[in-house]
Length: 610
Image (cartoon, rainbow, N blue to C red; front, side, top):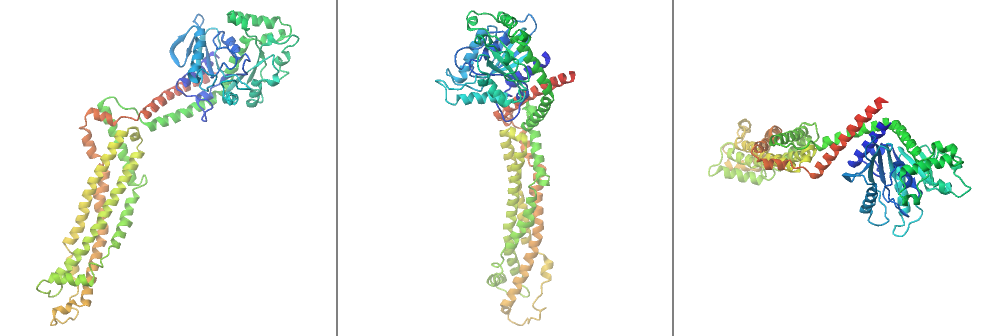
């Protein structure tokens, strides 16, 4: 039993040290799932005296009104005989208290640090561990006493605030409720019983404790309450007799107080038949036994929560990435691996594994053809322009059969306009590749870890794309220029001549400049230009893919890798400067994961040994 409860205490301490607990948090934590005992009662109900009797030490602040103003999580650890009693606070991890008067003062001081020297309350708990061979292994949570009115110096909401705080602890199904009620008070008005009944209507996890039995009016006794006839709980009521104020003033020790308590129940006729289950020693043993039973019953649920939380922690640690290597070689390797991950994600976008690459095909299949179709050759092939260019091309001697130079000038002036759509296609693909770079960066988890490296990789990738765009633009525009520089001969050989059409060669050459003749020239030129457009519609995408898409897939970061080997160690380290928040988060998660794995191993060992 002691091993099981000690294990839970150990896990609770570790949870507390890591901050893996909370007051009424929305999500379950390991702390929430571990059973504990909450001490509930009205102000001046004797809560502090009961706790001191269980511990066997005088260590809690005393006074009138509200004394407990913060939850006190008290963990008792049974040590081997001969060990010296001592206490440790979580907020003072390296300090050991052997003077329990100093423990009382530190509780007061730590309360004041959080709330100020006022009568305010705080839900932030104080964590205290007491080690002694004279205690049983327990975790007790001393909560502020319930009250009905606010006193001077307290806000009007304090009554509800205290009730909400108490409820946040005792409404947890793994919480054992220690309801403290003075015997000299009407049970129907007991604050502890009232709130316990609300969260535990069947009384299945509530222990009733009657205090101040020795202070009842003469002629009255608490037998009816102790026998469960006044208010029945699953577990028998336990009566305790605490030290009187005179005993406290005389520094009567706990051993003597416990002896007097045993004598009181044994020698008082009304309680003699109940003496075997009365007193603070019996209360401590019963609570320890019940805590063990609850822990055993909750082990499967605790194991399930631990396994689930371990998986979640491992997943989050994986998302945050590994910590930075210490040596330069390790750092360089880490950067290369991160860049390869980014490069792979970028390629997956292009290859269709991830979305985005299809937009490039849309440029070739829709945008480029639409832009070519929108080209207006009306200006180049207007009757006026055809007559002007052909006349200028003839010079001083009119053409004999066909106006070859005129054809060339008309075709060149039309084809040159294709440069616009070709250049636009290059720019459109460049813009899409940049978008894919930004997507790949945002999807590379390791780059989120290192803002400096993320910026460098992004800049290097965009610089490479710029170089590829320039090369692609040069090659693509060359395709257009090639069409302008060399016309397809077969096309012109197939053109009909005037003689073939029955023209009269004896007519004046200027008869050939009539509208019908010029219109036929315009038709021929337009037919040739359309043929060239159809050809470029297929060759321009090939040039763009070859110069931009293919090169981006093959070596987007080649230049960056080359420069990376020349970077001095200090700048190399700066690339792996992490966001401090991520470093802190990873460290906290790693510690929490270590805690949960240790807890899993130890709880599994206990579970198998049952």
